[in-house]
Image 1 (spheres, protein in one colour):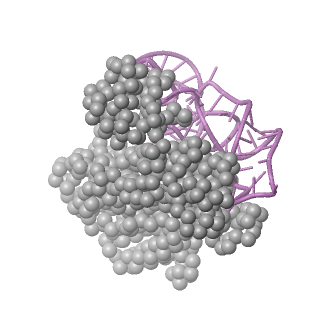
Image 2 (cartoon, helix red, strand yellow):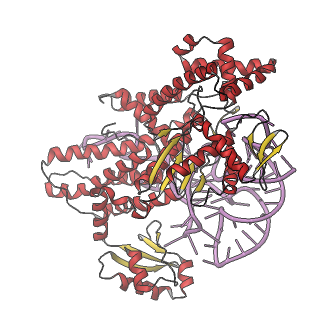
Image 3 (spheres, helix red, strand yellow):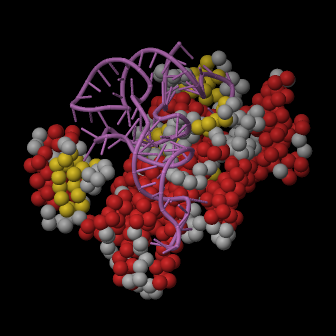
Length: 551
RNA sequence: GCCCCAGUAGCUCAAUGGAUAGAGCAGCACCCUUCUAAGGUGAAGGUUGCAGGUUCGACUCCUGCCUGGGGUACCA
């Protein structure tokens, strides 16, 4: 509103648009930075006065000051009331109508069949889901796709291993563990006997040629795995719109290859089919034995997504080690003319590593997600026994607290650099952590119970003491933070806001007493508590953190 | 060799080119007869890997170097 008013009244500051930034610290609510003021060629004092008079009468602004080269705009209390009431009461408040006709596709989680769900999949899954939720919240149409790794040479290996050393009935009892064991055994044996790799390649070729035996074994592996993944997602509170594994695109590969041929992009080189690219290695479309590759299937998937959803953007949440692959994918798609209305975003994240190096399912060097969750839950339970032994549902609370700790560890960083795994690092239960946020929320919920109990039927009244202003300022930032977080796919900005809100709320809680003898006063005091609970709750929903009324 | 990513407090990490580089942990000094101490308050802790450059303004952009990680044609 302020921005519009300024642009209208002043015709923009420097002829163009007014750029309002969120002011830092105690410097008001919004500001114009020195660059903008300089560009306008106007004296900063005079400009401040001009802005002030343009905004006078709106009731929104208390003062406009020229400070340290900036122009800072301080909002009135009325503006705070209006904003907070909107946030609390209007569910659609955060939605931006400009986005309602834009679809964004999110590719995230995407684990591989027949492999256990390791902590390595966590970042893609957690960050991907949060990013999806954030975009949805501000009004985009969203499609989440779980691009399961259910096709490729490793299935040849798996089939060979099952046939040689496995018993289907035995595997069915504990599929993931058994398949994983067989997969590892394959690689051990293949080191001694090169011919196994050749055998595996042949079995994958058979699979692609729809050999009945190969298909049956493969289907079993897929079913077992999907069941397992579903169980994990349930625990994590992750909901992905659709599972479309690589195999889904099997019958669409030839179409892509034809199109490449038609557009004269396909070349033969050393027996393989490739697309040559500028400044990077060529993209391999077909192996010399005629089998397809990751690239082939990703191209087919990309085309399918563009045709089906007509998205303005496709965001890939995958490991940073795949950067080159996606650069190639984008380059090929561009050559094919697919990207005129669709933008590809590679939201790569650093890898979770072990002290000893990269995690590897082949060598059995992984930390399983279940073990991590188990450990987190155990640690949370210990603290509950210590601090709140009367808590109901201790087990499920401990689980939710443990999971929030794990998720927050991923959500609070946006780092591309690798992470060396350690339980202590990921399971933080105090300080800037998931459980700290939950604790703060539970304090709000507890206050609410007390308020309703003590002052039955009392209505909350819009009111802000000066001491609550700092907190109110943070709460109303949720809209701007969501926009900014979505823009660069950085859910950590939202996590950071949640932390700052919780921190400020806790400081206020120690200083002020909310529920007092007088009903009227309590009703006024409770305004900021309700707003805090609402905003924190909203952020929890978006980040996938469980709201616990008691902790 | 070439390409990509990272290097910020003792440790783990924040910071759309903007104000005094911020948190947590560890350590130090405090605060529970009062709404949940998984909390709060205070002090201490920095040549943002190194050297240049661009800019009114650089952790952020550019160049070179150092260190770590990843990638680099028939794995995904």
